[in-house]
Length: 108
Image (cartoon, rainbow, N blue to C red; front, side, top):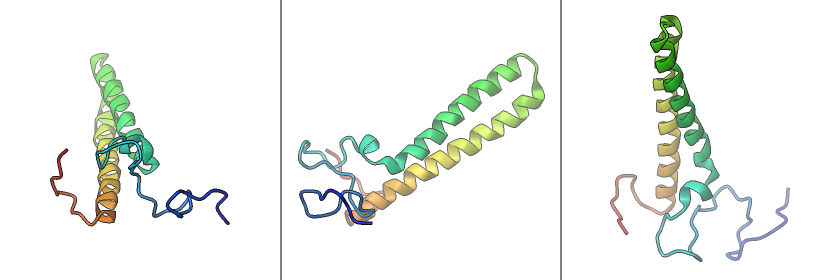
């Protein structure tokens, strides 16, 4: 498969190794990364599902459906853990591409 378009730096736009940085429109290293880097989206989606599961669990517990609450509370924890892990793994990949450690404090 050959790329249809080539980025200004000569790299194919669909390349897996493309950094999610927008150096042309910002001075900050990671401004807008959450939106530009689509690899974060599954993690955000799982976190949102966890919020929905938490709301459903609270409603189920409030109405006395203890069976549903006992299913949904652990599901909330699992969804949040999975979402957070995906977001952190992607963040680590981006930092490694820059030659930095995940815990490096860069600031703005």
